[in-house]
Amino acid sequence: MAAQLNTMLPERAEYVHSLPPVPGAVSAMRRRARAVLADWNLSSDVAEDAILVISELLTNAIVHALPPAELRLSWVQVDGLSALRVEVTDAGPALAAGQSLVRVDPDEQGRGQGIVHALAARHGVRVESYGIIRWADLTVA
Image (cartoon, rainbow, N blue to C red; front, top):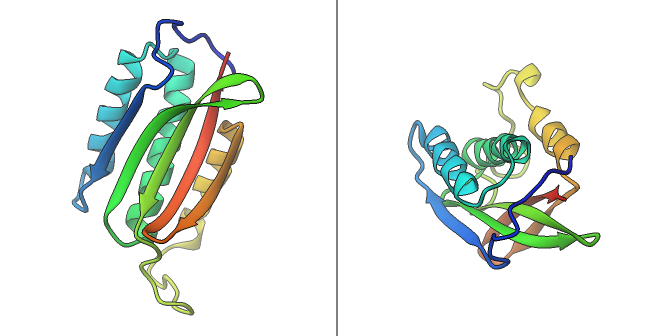
């Protein structure tokens, strides 16, 4: 989904913020990210897609991973287009190998990856020594 981006946006614009492991942290981070995207003059269509991707990746970090979690928004090039990169870093899986989330309703799990896949031009996971980074790029014309 391509949209207009103000050409005055600095190519090196970046936003980084840690997510505290407390109730309401994801909604607070959504508000912060919405303000940053507005400051960057991102179109409302791309901003709304970005907020949804941010919410899904942050929720995944809170539900399935160990703290701390960190959100990073930055700009990259994808196939010659500018793209907003959304990255969420966490400290790795919260469950030991072989454990399951017995309390979790299976109908309420697994939708986040589909949402990210549908909205992002590309997405993936990187494993680093300090944690796991889940990222998604949303292209902007």
